[in-house]
Image (cartoon, rainbow, N blue to C red; front, top):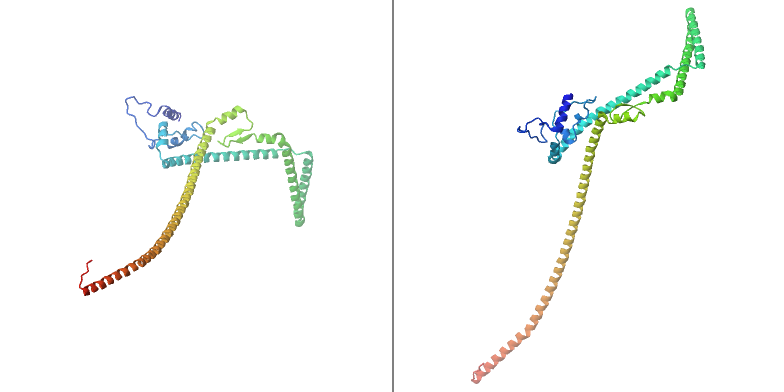
Amino acid sequence: MAINAAKQLLDELMGRERDLAPNDKRCMLNWDDQTVCKHFLVKFCPNALFINTKADIGPCALVHDDYLKRQYQSKATKLEKRQYEDDFIRFCQAQLNDVEKKIKRAKQRLEMSQIEKMNIAGNSCPLNEEHQERIREITEKIEKLLEEIQQLGCEGKVEEAQTSMKEVDQLKEERAQIKRENQSGHWIQKKAEIGVAQEKQMEVCDVCGAFLIVNDVQQRVDDHLMGKQHVGYGKLKNALDEIMEKRRRDEDEKEESRSSRHHDNRDNYYRYRDRRLNTSSRRSRDHESHHHRSSHYSHGSGRHNRNRSRSRSPDKSGHQHDRSSRNSFHRQSSNNGTTAKY
């Protein structure tokens, strides 16, 4: 066990290939090789926390290399890191569950020990003079009644014997009650002096489950706080809390990002809708304006044509009048024997 621990320490400090000659071929590993410790890549290897303690879980035979850890942190995908972290969380949770059971058993053991000491102290308490005298009188009555019951039984007086027996039972109950009162009074009296202070001297550490002395000297308290088990379980709990807190922050950021994208999409939709409405309204106004101009132009063109037709009518009648005048003049000239030249 000690040799393996020393070998593992040398591997971490000098590398697994520390004994190779300069010309020997070195084996190149990647962070995702099966021989690499996944827990070490995520945080640390839990096997190295409890060496040579009662909580020792044995040495780890896998590779622990800081270069591979940096490679894992830079090259591993989010999914791969998630899987490695899940394995680390399960292992740490199993170790913490074991120590929680240990703490619970230790507290139950301490509580039972206190109860047993209380019972012993109560049973061994002396009776005061008043109680002693009362118990002695009751005991004498019980013995006398038992003799009478035996005599009545021999005489066949069963009913009288049963009545006396009931009286004996009442006396026994009264004697037991006196003893209980004496024990209670004695415990209340002594508890403030030595009982409570001594019984509460021990307590259980909530981190590693070790028994501690209340108000112990500071040196012993420091030794316990710097012990491998206390430090190891505290390191496991802190590492687990860090991972879970990081995941909670990532989830919150994702939720905020989704909410922001949803808000942006909604704003974009409203802007797009407003543009569509404005464009449609502008097109409608342009169409109405064009229709109005077209109607006005058609009306003006018809009136202009009518004016032109009116202006052409006198010219046509005058032209016909000139033709009829020329024809009349031509006929008259023919009759006179002259030719008209134009």
